[in-house]
Image (tube, rainbow, N blue to C red; front, side, top):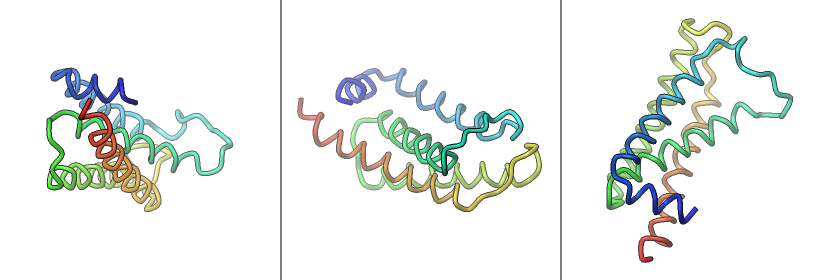
Length: 130
C-alpha cells in the first residue's frame, strides 16, 4: 500500500488519469446490460463489488491533490455517494436492460466511499512522513 500511495501522491497527472479512468470504469461497469454481467454464486457479491469500487473512487480522488483537509474529504465522500445514487437512478430508469435501482447498492457505495476516505487518511498519517 505504501508504494501505491507514494506513487499516486507524487505522480501528478497520473493520479488524475487513474481517478478519471476509475470513474469511467464505474460508469461502464454499472451501466452494462444485466445479461452481460457474469453470474457468480457468491452471496452479496454485487454489494461487495460496489463497496470496493467506491472505496477506490474516494481513495484515488483524494490522492490527486496534496493535503487532506476534512472539507475535501467530505466533498469526495459526498461525490462518491452522489455518483452511486446517480448510477442506481440510471439503472432504474430502464436505459440498461436487466438492471434495476437498489437502495442497498447505494448504501454499499456510501460505505465504500467512507472506507476509501478513511484508508486515505490512514495512508496520509502513516506514509506522508516518510
